[in-house]
Every structure is written in structure tokens, then in C-alpha cells.
Image (cartoon, rainbow over all chains, first blue to last red; front, side, top):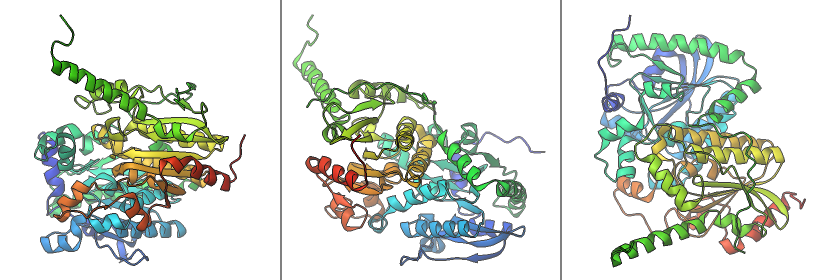
Length: 286
Length: 249
């Protein structure tokens, strides 16, 4: 039985989601998969360590695994750029996804990033188009894709590996259009109004499930920073993955892609009229 | 009593009117410029506003936007002709909440892709946007996936998509449909990038060099095919359409 929890504020969840001791992508890979082999590089001249990719076995089924990589201490974080991915990382992910399609392997992605890296070099190397290309390709990749937001999912940097047949979130994870700090800074020109931003942004697993933006929530019955809590969460995740992957794998590829298209096609606040006939000619002053 | 009891009020009223006129003239300005006289007709202009997160003060902002722009959101969609060649056009209006993309803009861009696909017409999108619409949160982020998927489907089916980047094209719009064109044109000196200059400067803790992220810079870095001033836009688009076998109907 799940015990009833005290009300946790969105801001508290942000802090939990970002906690340095929260499990990182390698912990999930170790716990869920066998025979993981890391695959590196974008084949265009760079290797971006902030994004981890590779192949592994999930209950005997070959899968491609991709995830943002954060460190557990400052040294690691500097090495992995705090999980902020550059175009090279997204291009590596794209390469691995196309490879998965070729070898008919499902793709499982782990999302945990403060956002795409906003540096000069990232801009020079086409951060925008790297993200856009991944989003577009994921929308019609002919193998099942499941994404799990494990910590913080932020902006296009998260979506670049997050267009999927199933999107799940851990109970204390957050998923947002922008970091609450960035949000407050853009909307109110005051990055200190973070708590207020968290409340109005609707970034928790619960509210996003309610809006139909995420499909399922993985419970954190005990803190997953503890060995016990992590194990319990992994058990639930493992079961869900096994069930969903086996049903997605049975689907016809065209159906799979069409269903994915429709899933995103209908994310909106209010349905648009299907037949719009207004052909009012704008008054051109020429 | 006179409506404008003092000079200041007169000045304010005048300023408001001037802003409104300026914005009205901006809605669909480029589509007007490239279309043959009287051929462009607007579509999908009758949506109601969305406030999916019930975000405070958002509806007031939208109402103000409708009034000032005469448009139902930051995107205008329609069908027109360039030297007799039919096309589906989209133009984002930076005068409407910085051209930001929420559910209405996402839906209109998607409808435009689907329409171009079903009618077998070329698609031309003029982008100008600060990125995702903050007030719609994750619904906005998901419009990146929705529009990109629609563009991808249209392109896979053989459709021609010409993307024209105008000042500014950043954030969630530059990281979705705007950079997915078969051909990407840009107006001179437009700011084009993912992160805004202020955010980059805060990250690297130094000033950015002049011209950083401008059209010319993006062409040098391989993102943009060609820089085209508005005066030459119609002719350039016409040539591209002709070279893709688009014919007068």
C-alpha cells in the first residue's frame, strides 16, 4: 500500500529533481539493462559527453539507450557540462536513433537536463537545427520510442530526445518549457521569483499527467536516493517497460508512426475547427 | 468635460493609435509583399483563444493582441499566388506577443502543412518569433513536436517547404519548423539562433561580438542558404518555385 504523502510543493519537487544525489543515467542503465556498450561520437568531428548513448539488452531484447548525463560531483559535472547538451550530442543521438531503426531496436531515452547548452560554440554549430532535426526524425522513426523524465526536463534540450510513443515521468521529476529561473526572468524580468514561477508553470508529473502530456507516472514510494527506494522504483519501471515494449513491438510500423503523429497532433488547449471556410481576402494596399 | 483633459492624455492616446496602426500593417506584411495583388486569402483565422493552464492575466494579454493586430494569434495562414503560382503561406507576427508559439500558432502552422500536403502546393513560412509562448507552458513546448512532425510528413510526401527567417527567429520556433525548410532563406541582419544573446552573455560572462547570430553569421556557419532582402523576395521565391516544377494553374 502506498502511504498518503504530505503535500509537496512544485518548488520542492524542483529541488528534489535537481538533487546531486538523485540517480543519474548510468544508474538506470546498470539497474535495467545487461551488456551495455557505450557508443560515442557524431561522426562529424566531435564527441559530446553531456549525452550518453549505447546499445544494451533488456530482458534479452536488444535496445538503444540514450540519455542526458549529469555528474554526481563538481568534477564530473564539469566534464559532462552539467547535462547541457551541444549540437554534437544531439547529432550523436540522431545517429544512434537511425541506427536503431536500421536494426529494428526500440529506443529508450532518459531525460535529465537543465536545457540545451546556451554557449557561443553551440550556436555556431547549429543548436537550433540540431534540435529541430531530432524532433522531426523522432516523429517518424519506425521503431518504438519510450522516454522517461528522471530528473529535470527543460526546454527544447529535453524534447530533442523526447518525442516518443510513451512519455513517463518519475513522481518527483519536472518537465517544463524552460527552467523556472529562465521563465521568471523572461516573463517578469526577475529570476528570483522562482517559487512563484514553479506554482503557475504546471511542471510536476501529476499536473502533466492530468493534461495528457505525459502518459504515466512512476512512483517514488521512498526517496530514490536510498538504495531501497531506488530498487522499488526500478521494479515498477522495469515492469512497465517490459509490458509496453512488448506491445509496441507487435505493432505494424506504419501504425506505430501514425499513432505517434496523432498523439502530438492533438496536443492543444482547444480543438480547432476542422473545416474552416473563411476565405476573407485581406485588404491589400497595393 | 473634454475626453482628453490634458496634454499628456492626448499624447498617450496618440501613441496607442500609432502602435495599433503599426502592428496592423505588420500582420501579413510580407505575404502581402510577395503575393500577386488581391490573390491572398486568409484561412483558419477564426479560432478562439486558449488558456490551457489558466495562466493569470494571459487572456487580457491575448485580448489586447487581438485588438492591436486584428488577428487571432501570432500566425497568419492563407493561400495566394506568386506570379500565378499557387502557394500556402504562413507569416508569424512579432507584434503579437513577440510571435511566440502557443497552441493556436502550433495548430495553424500544422494546418498549413496538412493543407499544402493535401492540395499538393508549396509551403512558404515567414518566421519571426521569440520562441515558445511562456503562458502555455508544456503545451507550447509540445507544439515544437507537433509542427515539426507535420513539416516532416509534408516533406516526406514530396512537398516543397521554403522557410524564410526574419528578425528575430529564436527559441522554440528556430528549434522546430523554422529550420526544417528544404530551402532556408533569411532577411538581412535578422537575429537567428536558439538561445537569445542575453542568455549566452550570462552563460559565458562576456559580451558577444557584433553580428553574432545575425543572418550573415548564420550563412557563414552553414544554417542559411541565401540572404534575400524583402525587395528581392518575390523574384527569388518565384525562381525557386519554378525550379521545382510548380506551375501556374
